[in-house]
Length: 285
Image (tube, rainbow, N blue to C red; front, side, top):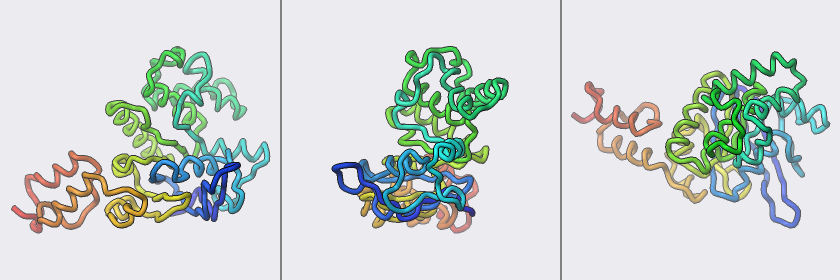
C-alpha cells in the first residue's frame, strides 16, 4: 500500500490551552477507509483540520503524497481540491439558497466550466441519493439530509481523499445506516475515506484500518480487526471491543464458528457464521 496522506510528529496547542496534538504521526493508505477512533477531546477534529490545511502544525509536517503541505493561497486551494473535509455540524458548511447551488460552490471555486459543474453536481446528488432535493432550500431539510448535502458538496469536487468529522453524529439509526451505505459506495468507487468517531461500533462496521487516539496522539494504528479485538489496547483509550466482536470471539472460543476468517461487520454476518447450513469441519455441530 502507498501512503497518500501522512502526518509526521505533529504538535499543536490552541491559545491558552494544553496540547491538542502531541507528537502525532499516522499514515493514510490509498483507497482505504481509516477510522480515527478515540474519546471526545482526544484531538481527532484537530487532526482532520491539519490534514486539509485548515490548521498549520506548530511542529512537524503533513505530507500529501511525498510532498510537504503547501500553505500558500494557491497551494491550499490545490490541497483542498484533493483533500475535502466535511464538518461534524452540516449547518457550518451549508449556506446557499438551494441544495444544488450549495453543492456547486466547491466545483465553481475550482474554476471549472459551468457545464462541467452541472454534471458534477448531478453526479454527486445522485451518488448521495438526494437528486430530488436539488431545488430545496437547505434550511427545510432534516439533519440526515443536510449531512448528505454537505458530503455531496465535497464529493462534487472529486477529491482523492474525503475527511469526515463524526459523520453519524446527530443521526437516528435509519439515517446513520443510510449514510454508512453511501460511504461504502464511495469507498468502492476508489475514494480514500478518513472519518473521526468515538463510536467503536461505527469503526467496526465501516473501517478497513483504525488509528486509536488518546491524549492528542496515536496509541496504535493498524487493521481494524487487529485493533478492535485488542481489549487491553482499547482500554488504554477508555474503550472496549464492540459487542459484536465480543460475541464473535466468544463463539470462536467455544468452537461455534471458524477460528480463522475475517471479522464480521454486521450482526447478519455473524449469524451467517453461526448458522451456516454447511459449517466448516472445524466448527462444532
